[in-house]
Image (cartoon, rainbow, N blue to C red; front, side):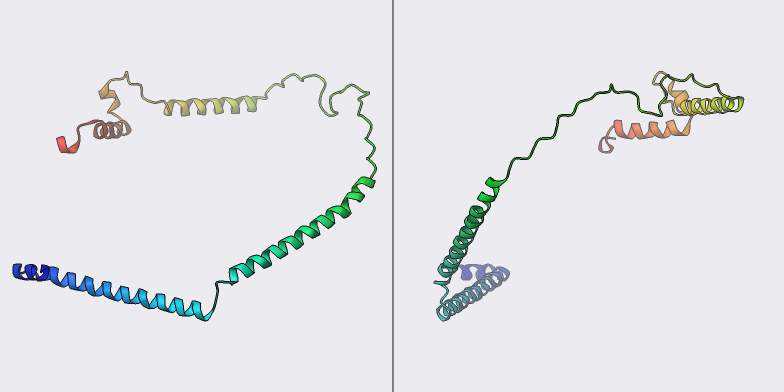
Length: 173
């Protein structure tokens, strides 16, 4: 009844799809049926119903044998353990001498040595470089004017990026 109604409406694509689905379903059903028959024939030919019980029996036998061997080994080791004498305890440690400083370390702190002229000059150069690097790395303070901040190319780039992030969305512009 359904194919006739679809045929009358002129929708042949659905009819073809339904027929193909029915054919594929029939093939799958036949395939499963044959596989089930083969499994039954194989099970009848090779009777595997008893084998799990046999395997379980063999497993239990081996397990029981292992338990007996372990019990025998423990029984043999117990007399040996009982016959041992407790070991004598070592004498307690006592310190007769007070702890002193290890050799090689000075007993008193030494005075800091004075720097030579070349060392002082090198120290001054290091301090100057550190001050210059600290000046370069200083972040710009928000209190400065916008015109002063936009003079450097780096701050101009930051302003454009901030405007893109904090500004109106592109859809609303």
